[in-house]
Image (cartoon, rainbow, N blue to C red; front, side):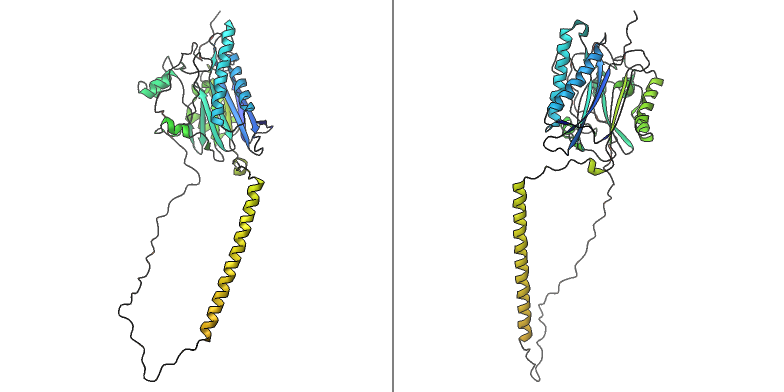
Length: 389
């Protein structure tokens, strides 16, 4: 991949430590790349990581996660974005675990991550933990990712309602995070509808984004205190960084107990800037195409010329043939009694179908078909205040 100085999206980002007094253990990055095989195709990678652990270890883990993922993607060829994101996240998890093993002060540290890679106008995602990815399209907002938490598993199994989960003591117990001893499993499902199976959600990778679509990535410091509908309202009513600053202010007004990080990525309104161009044809294929087109044109001219000459000759022969006169007293033969008269054609007008100007935005909250695998519990909830000396 070739680094690009300018992204093809409208991007804004903000991070805030909150008002609890804890260090900011969130980390984020946005990088733009050009394809080596097709330099006109620009892609943009965005990552939000939320660190877990004491003694500043969470800050180390989130930075290591972002650096490792960015470096891995930059070194790739960008041909298979979903697979590249998976491998990048696995490498980041292993790097965090090795660092924690070699430093006693970093023991048990970890990080969440939410990654989006927009290649042209196609979206690819991968998440671990409870940092989220949203799609804002038109007047709707849809959570594309799934939280890997204890309460989310309880909601999926029907043991808790969403309202009960928000107040549950285990609300911040994470089931999956970078830095765990087990090999982490990146979640590459893109949830659009509640009736989708996990396989259906996987197939949504590479979905086409429309002009004006906004992808929002954030840490749980925002979503713990600000609802999805409030996020949608702020993004739609205020453009750019002002909307993100207002969301941070709203979270801080309600306690600001955790770090808050937000990235918004909006597709440009001009489709030509967002559409992935087709792969260029080889010179040999182009020459063959030109030759075939030339042969078809010549053949068409010959056929049309021959047909015109034939019709002209036929018309001349008809005019030269004398029409015999009827003899006196002769009569025309009566019409045949078995003549079939074709009925008038019946024209059926099909019912008109209403066509929307844009694809309808999903309005349902996605529910997975099966609970994610269980992993080691997070030793520190992300909203735990530092111990008083």
